[in-house]
Length: 151
Image (cartoon, rainbow, N blue to C red; front, top):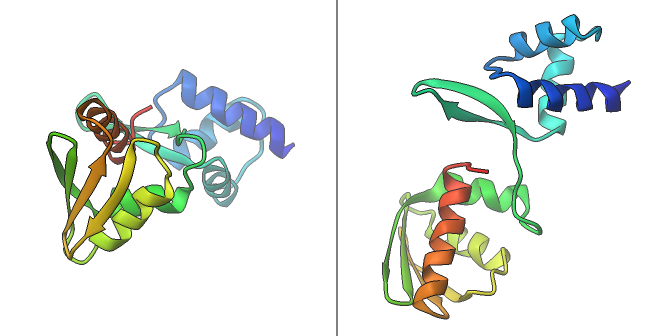
């Protein structure tokens, strides 16, 4: 039952812009599933659903599709600590929330991106040595994808 319910949830969030757990529970009821709010909440956590902005202020549930090999923990650290970034040729400078630079640098290192040679972190600034200017652009795209929760 759980597997078919999870499949239905994925189908529903792909078909409709579902904003709330209550709305998801209603759609599941309409599809013949008897669920409580607690069940829907657990399913959202198990499926690693997240919310994405649509139409200006509205949000909808989407399936989080992290790059292969990137753990959820590192994604959260990057999302929570990131403030901004800028490049200087093959050096990527990342600004973080005060006190988060070492954690964000460790998360980037743990992602084992082939473009990143290494990171040095202070309190709120990270300097990443990247193999080339083109690779710097690639890494910036990967970081944006994670921070902005894009697919």
